[in-house]
Amino acid sequence: MIEVKGLSKYYDKRGGAFMQKKQRICALADVSFCARDGEISALLGANGAGKSSALRIIATLLKADSGTVSVDGFDSASEALQVRKHLGFMPHNSGLYPRLTAVENIRYYAEIAGVTGDKLEKSLATLIPMLDMQEIAERRCGGFSQGQTMKVALARALIHKPKTLMLDEPSNGLDVMATRKLRTILRRLRDEGHCILLSSHIMQEVDALCDHVAIINEGRITLEGAVADIKRQTGQSNLEDAFVFAIGESLDENAEAQA
View 1 (cartoon, rainbow, N blue to C red):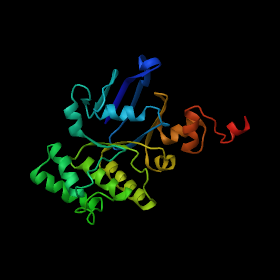
View 2 (view 1 turned 60 degrees about the vertical axis):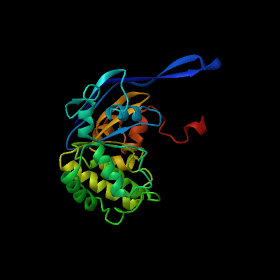
View 3 (view 1 turned 135 degrees about the vertical axis):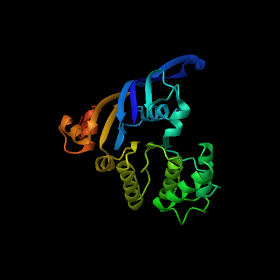
View 4 (view 1 turned 90 degrees about the vertical axis):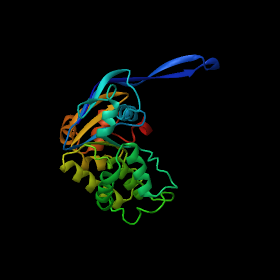
């Protein structure tokens, strides 16, 4: 379970004459939301809305200026090591080493996470067939398709058997079959009781997959709830229109042209 309470984050940006003037930019302002066990939750927002900052704070890669984040009961600021043990994070940029094979990439991450010996071998024996990686397991990752890269990155995030999984735009660039495979895997993990939090720009995918949604705009949560509740609260029949309504944009695609 992931609990975010009152999260705020500011960045310093220098500009003006001779780059001496410092500006304080708000990325997150009092953000609170929850992703529960046995559910797939989505954090939705336009580019620059604050999604990546929130995910990186949850993953202990950034420190918040205020507020708290709890992952499976562990505080991300004071108990970062425990959070990393309980969280599997699949970033938007997979960061695979192209000269290593798929299995070598997974082993490397597993050893950093403290997974070795029989425990590592058993995890590999489970993940490789589960993710249908038999044909690519011993191939170098350089030149992998988006779908193949996704499988390796997901295996790497799962190798230490975390209870909670966080995915940053996991279906970006995937073809139809790879997207369907990913959807099946995530539903299986949800049904096994895992907490899954993802970010995505593909509203149809979120609508089909997710149980719970939090919409962030300009660093603030504007709506949170079950997908059906979000549609009902906004008076829209599909999630894309509900999202646009929630962030205060016009639903008329031609509004600007007509203005």
